[in-house]
Length: 188
Image (tube, rainbow, N blue to C red):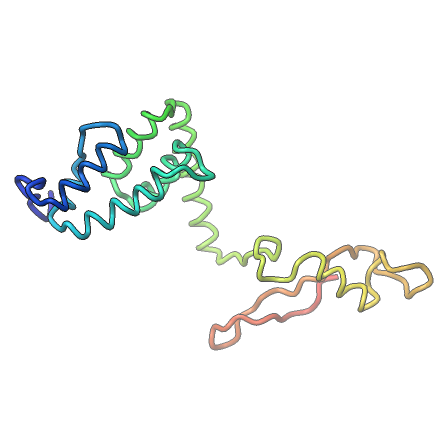
């Protein structure tokens, strides 16, 4: 059930009419869907929202239009927005999405939801390799060389650890106040 009553004649407002005309021209359709009709209750909000949607969804970029719609569907599923799921599924179908592609999308969304819940429940720490702010493999290797622990060290130096090659990773731990810090023993 709607929380507002949309304007009876929204295009009587010139700002609303301008946005609706732009929607029609951009989408090459006379159809104005309910989201825009309901947003017409606040012309400034309508203008801002359409401007953002047009900039992201209707402007050519590194992602093709159907991929953008698939991402929008996935986020709408995660956010439990039935309206957006339906409207962006229709848009993706209009851009060529097949039933099998939709089924695969739903499978991926369901898998991501499940593994996200597991990772959250287990509080799995992020791997250094996935976080560019943490030590890179090359930095770890340089540290090994300085500490005489790497088998890649030039001949004639101290014996190297048998399992070296970038194994120096110190886990990130939290102190009593919840601040993250490097700690623990070197895993070598």
